[in-house]
View 1 (tube, helix red, strand yellow):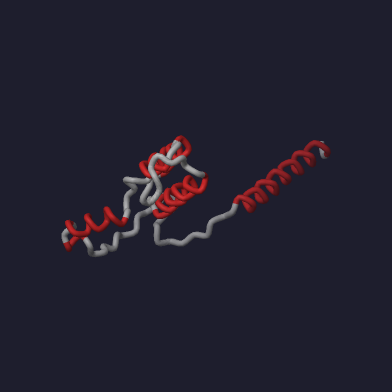
View 2: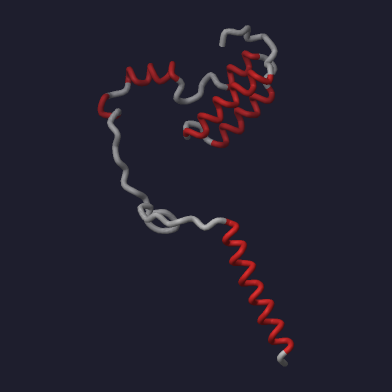
Length: 126
């Protein structure tokens, strides 16, 4: 950053660093626990230098990627297709539609209503 590291951190500076952290989290380069810890660092930072320290060692930064690419052997650069893993709900290749919570709530409401209706019928037909 071009600003003085001892300058007070503005809300715009905090939002800039938060956006970078959010991007790293969304791309999978940052674990959720590390993201939360770094967000705490953003909240605690009082100067621009402290904000820069929060995002200084992020994985996948361009300056670090250039150095890593120069030392990475060529055989590691190839894309390897991994076989699909079986999940908790069956094979990974099988595409099952997800049921929304609203649909599940409606089903639960119908089942419970039928139970109440059956109980009422049993009570009144004695």
